[in-house]
Length: 231
Image (cartoon, rainbow, N blue to C red; front, side):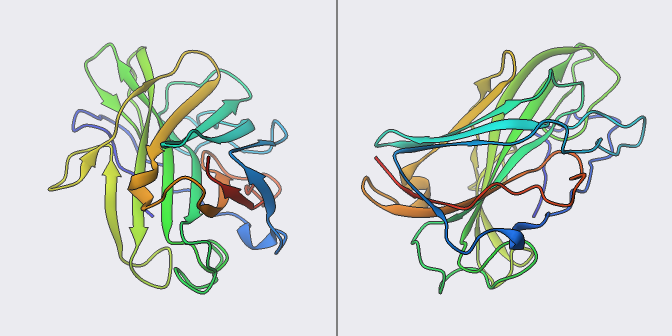
């Protein structure tokens, strides 16, 4: 899994390498939901982000909503507190677009079997020195925050293996650049199209979401697995 800056002006940052967490601890039976699901998570369960400078506070999630409207899948992560000055991935979603555990990646410490896509929602920042980032930061004052997405499709049998980039925070060949969603307050929200996953209304997908910023204090950063039928 890769974390990418949103533009080449990112300065002076060491991007934190984040553990994939204890996804395997999830119940084998996912939650069933139609159209929308809302999940809660305790505050204070994610440790600080390690950087080349002083540690930065994690983007600790206390609420996660995944909503569909017939065209888009929208992910909204509600943070426990105001973000600092370090841009980071907020939440990672493993998605099984065909709802078939027999296809996609094999079971691993990263995720159970069957997931074929990975979606990262990034909290990006611009600074008064002209720099901007979706991973890392500078010593400048934050002047703007927005959400963006990275979406990739697994091509091998492991989430660390080969993958095809579909949407990113930088241009790269035919890669589609992410939209930008303004962030004001504690809610970080972004979306992808059904067509990005080859889906249509009425399809059912499996989703395993995990907190992606900082390190899990108790060793588990994963939300309950969800089986979601799209509006």
